[in-house]
Image (cartoon, rainbow, N blue to C red; front, side, top):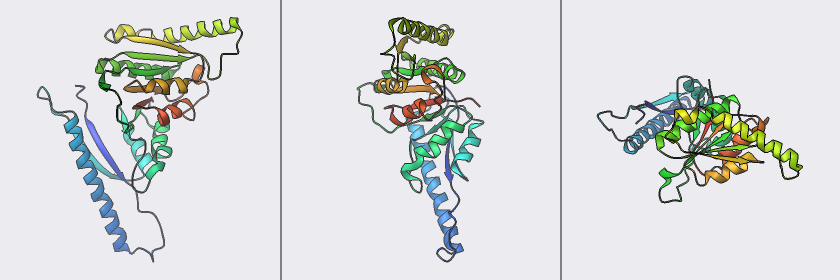
Length: 268
């Protein structure tokens, strides 16, 4: 076990502003209290699920706590991320926000949080032993990619599974390149991948690494490999195969379409 404290948070947004003739002050107060009560029930259920998923072992009970906070969801969670090792959210929500949450709260968090953000999809595993599937990491050689690589090695080691390290030489098609250019692109991509992995394999000798070099469309290949993985890790932006693509492209495409949980590596 990692012995890391878990804080489960439910943010209650302010009541929407509207004409006072439609809702009395007492009615607004009652509605607000109901939202808070609903949040407390959500927290209680979530704590129960957390304890059931990770029971106490070796005399170390799971340190899990819950908190209902009143505020605007995105800035509240961004502020909490300053003191967090990992921020975990679902792809969308219920109630007022509904199906737009991935485009608002979750997508804002992966752009502005001060720590890595995990997006947990509710899709059920389709294999017999999903906990034996590998971790996949997208690598391009920049700073957030280095953080993603470190997170991926740590996760693979903790889970006791293999790691697939994927690098794309370009975001376009390399099929039309002359042979000499194709060879140079391949050699350069192999060098980027080797440099990105240097040191990590020595630090994590228990992790078997499978290097995968593709020549185009990194998001497509990461999404395809997510179907046979238990976790995908990507940087928040990058260069090379992820050139100029902030979360609007590769990382966003992976977060939306991956068939497994995704961690977007971010540093404060």
